[in-house]
Length: 171
Image (tube, rainbow, N blue to C red):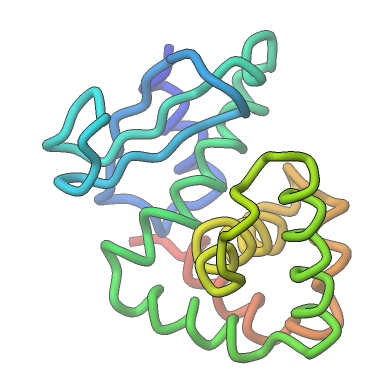
């Protein structure tokens, strides 16, 4: 069933046609883990981009799992594989307000206090690896994460709409 999830993703995001990450089920904390082709020593398939569905995804519907796969691919893999989308990601990052950046700093502090991330992690590392991908998932897969999308609507609406159009276009 995991590869069939990609078909569900493509129904929502036809602009991702031509990409085909390996989708596997695994164990570990959270909903998913992403392994970029050729850069991850722990990848179950080092020669492919891999999205591993984890413990928290057990029991979800195929549509919910497809939402996780879409969000992980769009926020982590696509910027590495598509120069046009990478430019939009940078535009998205530059459109963030000081208030949004402050919320991300607070989120990082909460993660540090809970032991989810190291206490000595620098904000830029946190933001690039966790914060920005999380914001992108919320903004670009709102049908799967309405609450996160709501936080972005006014301030980043134009760049989010450009990215959505890109993802939903037919190839």
